[in-house]
Image (cartoon, rainbow, N blue to C red; front, top):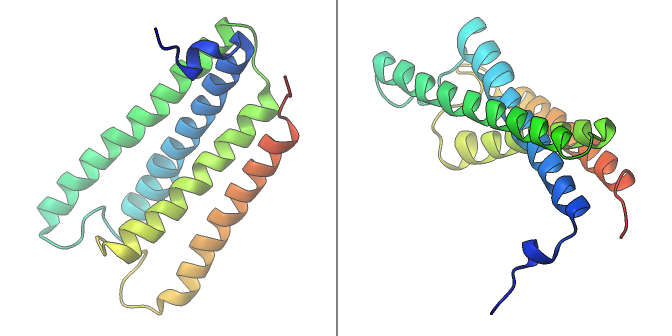
Length: 157
């Protein structure tokens, strides 16, 4: 009978993975729903999730994106509640995971959706270089800070 790595992991290691997963999902969800959707799609109206068709299709795509983003956010909160129920929350470690999730999502969004697939750009009819530098730079800083916090707060068994 084969045993999985998860079955061999200690309860503390499983709880830590839950906490990290919670922060990553919550951070990615906040990046998608608040930073990208709320600010860039709705308030500034710079782009939509899918800008290669009609406005109706773009708005429908925004709605689906919004649902997925809030799903990630809520899933992260459920995992956080479960981690707390199982023995407490290392808040500094969780915030490190949140920053890593936020920065990681923004890098994937900019790199894959903006540049590789071309579904939309940050903004149209402007020189994109300053926007790309700010987007990638801010995202890389959030990701790096989050990873440093996670590295510094790790426990060794």
